[in-house]
Amino acid sequence: MGKVLDSLKQRGMFSATTNEEEVAKMLDTPGNAIYVGFDPTADSLHVGHMLPIMGLAMLQRVGHIPIALVGGATGMVGDPSGRSTERNLLTAEQVQHNSACIKVQLEKFMDFSCSNAAVMVNNADWTEKLTAIEWLRDVGKHFSVNYMLAKESVKRRIEDRESGVSYTEFSYMILQSYDFLQLYRRYGCRLQAGGSDQWGNITAGIDLIRRVEGAEAFGVTFPLVTTSSGEKFGKSAGNAIWLDPARTSPYRFYQYWLQTEDADVAKFLGFFSFLPWEEIEAIVAEHAAAPERRLGQKRLAEEVTRLVHGEAELQRAMNASKALFGGSLAGLERRDLEDIFADVPSSTLPASDLAAGVTLMDLLVKSGMCQSNGEARRLVQGGGVYINNERAADPAVTLGPDALLAGSAIVLRSGKKNYRLVRFG
Image 1 (cartoon, rainbow, N blue to C red):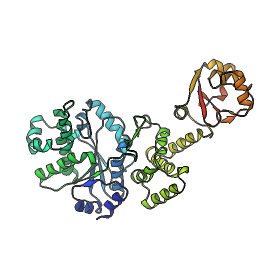
Image 2 (tube, rainbow, N blue to C red):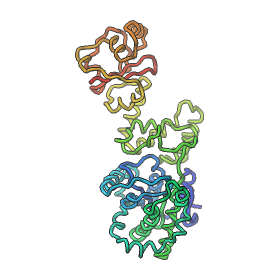
Image 3 (cartoon, rainbow, N blue to C red):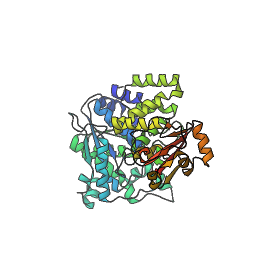
Image 4 (tube, helix red, strand yellow):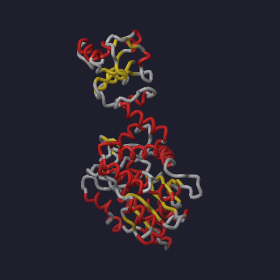
């Protein structure tokens, strides 16, 4: 059908389009503006947003102009699509702050300064200026309530007698449609992309452009991502995996991708890396030959962490990961220690204990790793105790402040995997 569309299909990044033949032609013709909207409901995007972001980034690489629309207006209303309850409304200040943070994250994926530079817009720029009367007269008159009620995102909510849908959220479709109309007028944008749950909003915008401008516009959707086990993608122990390192550290981000199931490796490499498909196939074949080595997961984690956090943070995350398998702990910062050993037993002892000098035998007992001095002595003499991943030989050795990692803690280990973090403060 078309080289670019075929490539998206090959990578599993295509769900549906309003006109496959025309969209294929557009994608094979560089210079078209394509937009995706992001509602600033938080000060960070998460990995659940990454597929449409990667879609925009890939289309920029073949010569198109990506438009990232941050919903300064729609974010204050809330999209009912894919929701069973109404979103909490944000203040204008929250939306402004979140929008600024999101732009920083999008700049990791797209180029905002090249010849086909990405553009970031805020729909508050054209929505806030309208009066209620202008809105109803010039925009609302083009929407049939019957048409809006038939949309799946609205229909599901109306059928739920417990929550229903508010007039505020019901109006979201009109707001997003108006965005498409404005981007058509300002940038000649005739193609909107988004997750498959945005189909109703996208087609409503296409209808508005046809009614108001007599022009033809199109839509294309990406699949909603789930894991092969059916779990919602982008969650870890019930928490979102954020792109902002202050919310999800690069180490935990890297670890999330390392935990990818074998069945998802090829799919996620296609979605979330810029690797050529031929190289992805080679990686998957090598992984399938020796799945216990987890080569596919390691390459996936490296590619995505490098893309989102940069080479330096990737190396830090990789070094931190090796620490759990006996690697060096030298050079780790406090945040690394807290991340790596967040799920191991820990204890806090007075800083005065270390200042005065504490024997390894006493530390093993005080930290709870051993129940008695005799047990501690036998464990050390048997070669089974490690201080900061260095084997200890003498149970009577005295430890002082110079034993601290990052000036804050000591890591004790017995055997291969029995760790304990001892903080001093």
